[in-house]
Image (tube, helix red, strand yellow):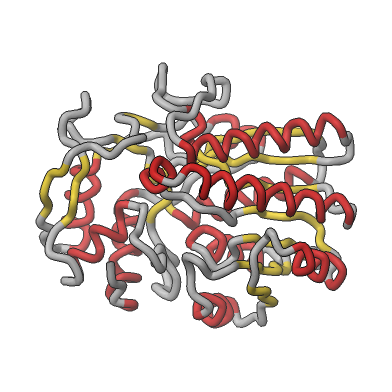
Length: 336
């Protein structure tokens, strides 16, 4: 059974990917500093999979922790999710983001090199494309981040590319996510950060479950169908399965590759809100606020490269995303 080190393993995407790894016959080894997640997620993963999961609590900048992990396990590959991810916060605290995201990645890569672990799947982002000059966005689109969060992703992509050039045995896949939403069908895990959420669905769920009075919609003056921002929303389980496809790709390929993971369809904030209301038979009040710094107006993917090369496709639609998110919210009564 191949062991996969999952950094940020108790986070939103990391935890769902851990479950998929187990279902595909891998053994995930999770590490997380719990700065924006909860140890209880481990119990939920074990409940869903009926498997004991190895978990290390700590920061990737802790060299002794990483040395211990690589010495105690025969790590086949690394899935690197750990990092800060709030666009607005990154604009306010750029140095914090460069330190948390880039420095920790460099320390991880140093220990991987010492342990002769040569495969990594990196959690990148569609933010590396900045303000799109053409739609849909494919991997040949120019990369030019417009906020510090996106800059950290782009810098790490470049580091990984340089590393594969210097070491022909090293292989890296950068998965450029669009907007993950939804939750596990069990309702046991979902998007439930410790701090203020960065994603749309937890906000909507909070209002729907009575934890918040109304949804804040940032900007209604974009050049879109209804003035609100348009994004490509992908179910987190489909996203997790993309990581399985990526790690299998690494078994037979060397070098650096980037793949978009999205549905290829854009929805506005108000369209998502309407779908959530209709799918769950409820009403969610909202108020319009000014645009946030660093946000782009429209972004949706061309994921044909992942479709063809990784043999990966999305299977869940917007209704699935909204229903699973609400089920998780009801079951966990998440607070914002």
